[in-house]
Amino acid sequence: MRAEFVLLFSLASGHRKPSGSAAPGSRFPLESAQDLDVGSNSLRTYLLSVNEHFLLDIQTRSDGSKFAELVLQNQLDREQQSTHQMVLTAVDGGAPERSGTAQIDITVLDANDNAPVFDQSFYRVRLAENAPKGTVVIKLNASDLDEGPNADITYSFSGHAPIKVRQLFSVDSRTGEIKVKGVIDYEKARMHEIYVQAKDKGPSAVAVHCKVLVNVLDKNDNIPEVILTSVSTPVQEDAPPGTVIALTLSGQESLPFLLNKSSEGYFELLFLHAFSPERATNVLSYLLWLASTVNMTKHL
Image (cartoon, rainbow, N blue to C red; front, side):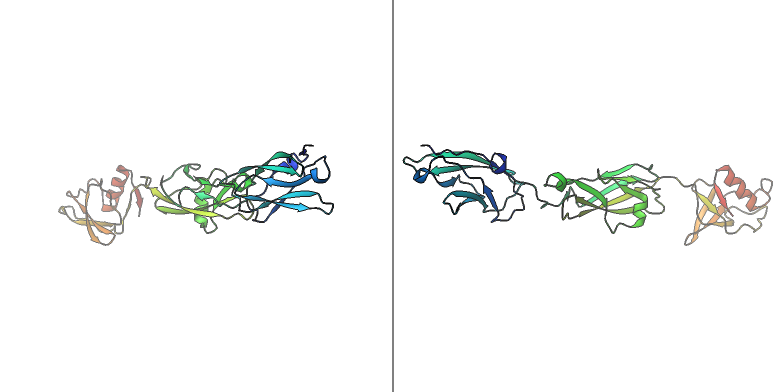
């Protein structure tokens, strides 16, 4: 009679799901085929189709019946091949011998054996001074060859990111977007270094890091200042052009004065025309009038 290979295992043994981290030598028992014959016509052995990863180990029970186990011979790698198909054949001892077959489907489960990888390890971006809060500075992207939670990536500041950076910027844990959080002031800092890490949600996850260099672009957001250090010296009515009348810490090109550098950080303020007491009674009042005319800030 024909050796009947009754596949009772269906998903239980016909569909196996070993992990990608399963070590060579791992065993996966298969349910036995059933042969209604007895004696020499009963089930004699099992055969497995040729494949790269598994071999078949046939065991004999105390009653003489046989069963088979799949034995992992070579490491599985889900990223290279996520499924494997083999044919299991049961052969009886009759003459002529008869056989039955079943297909074994192997689905390799993901193991968290890949760390995320950024598109780049270093990014350079430019950001305008006084950029509004919520402005997207850059959108980082990291990818992971794993799947499921093992490929679900979260972004955050690296542990050594300074507090100053955390006050000025935020990192969206889901999208990887770096956004403006505080006031970006070119006069306080022309550059910011942001260190960001990416980490998956799998077990024994390893964080990877990247650096973002933000160059701040200056904006003309400061009014020029004239700081007078000497305002009490009287000026003669007939003082000739070129007479030194004051010292200033910072000049303004639009002022109707000639500025000559006298020392580091200081300039001589030279009145270009004959002084007119009819316009101002002294140098100080004249400069105040001039400053108000050109809409400048005074610090006396």
